[in-house]
Length: 503
Image 1 (cartoon, helix red, strand yellow):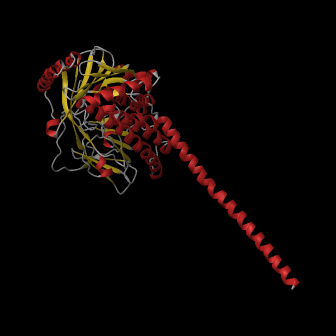
Image 2 (cartoon, rainbow, N blue to C red):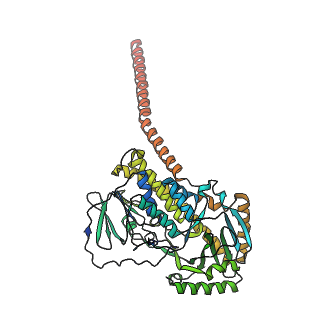
Image 3 (cartoon, rainbow, N blue to C red):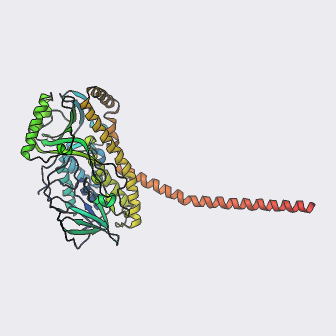
């Protein structure tokens, strides 16, 4: 089947030129007959994972979930790569052990994490298994289209309908409590709950938080893949004080390497460009020659000479949202629509997967009576689920993605200052010696979404039990005080009578 990367889940490192239908200047809205209970905008990693998780935990089938994607189709060998870590892989295993196995088979284990100088000198090497001792959850590199294909195949097997050429244009709450989604082709769907997994330029987000722009970070990335094996196993992070840039190289197969080279850029125009195959090869060849003159090791240049699927993207960020759910509780954001990442820590897609796991388990608890009942998205049930969702996820993503910004800044400072680079190299060596890897990596991979949801639910239930018990305690206290007052008044009255009698 033809397979293409989806645009709805567009991240700074996924930018692809997709052939999508233009928005008509005037559209006549046509409502389609059958309406799903749940509508998901965006068939990227977040959207497909959510559809699969809801299908399992909320027993939504037979048209209960529909996914709408703006791309014409999915295509093989498109886009770059992605790293998958234990916290995201736990979500896949929770959906289906078979799905996890399929994803792992399509990826490639890192085994090692290496920090290097541009000339190939190794600064430090860490074993990836310090992030988890679970063999099924070891870090892997995978091409995005292969991950997407595994998710799409699983969704198709589950009977989940994915509609292509459906770009979301407007989302609004109707008077009857349902949510209407209007697409660029003039059609409209209504659903009881709408999830926005439509990426950085999310239209669903506008219904929750209004129109928000993203700010250019001043960094551009040239990325691609090549049928070239790495000479040493592992994900590698070289930095150069001669070229004043840093990079990332990681394997996605025995003979396949993904490269990402980061450079400072003053303007967005300088940072962005959709590259044809010929232009991509030309830019890579020119860059390889420049890096060779700056003393880069030939092992880093080999992928540039055999590059394909090359794109240049600008990295954008936005202040974290304090609101991921609209007032009705029926329009819910996740993934890049809620928290656009920067790529330095490899946790952007992992945060989207965590969103999925947390959401599915909360909805199962509050809307499905722990999985015992049919999906019931009543106002009270949704309010409870989404309130906990925002409480759990907003602080978590802010912390982890904030760490990503910090790590990216230190990598660029390594490239710009030889003094800082020496200090940072010493810090990296010490952290690997004491922690087994960079300390900043552990909070991401160590997170277990299911345990966190269970803890949150238990705390809420204990709090509710305490609040119910409190009025009883207060009533007993009041009754006791009243008795003591009565006794006191009786004694006082008796004393007055005795004194009066003596007079």
